Image: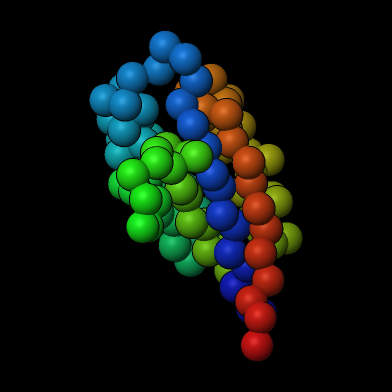
Length: 104
């Protein structure tokens, strides 16, 4: 089965500090999501710059979620643990999730 890559683009909500978000990501989000059987790999990146310009990136963070099995991922996301992680994340950030398909 092909891996599905989900790209999440997001900004922190007003009043949420970078330090608080990044501590939560390292302590809760990354280990929990990477521990799911449906996940091949989950990484979070801080946006550093827009190539070739001094303008600020439109998003502060990017998540890359490589899902090995979308059906299993749906079951994993429905668990109490993941519902808690999702609620915590929603309180911290405004996010757009994009499900991608590889070309070629």
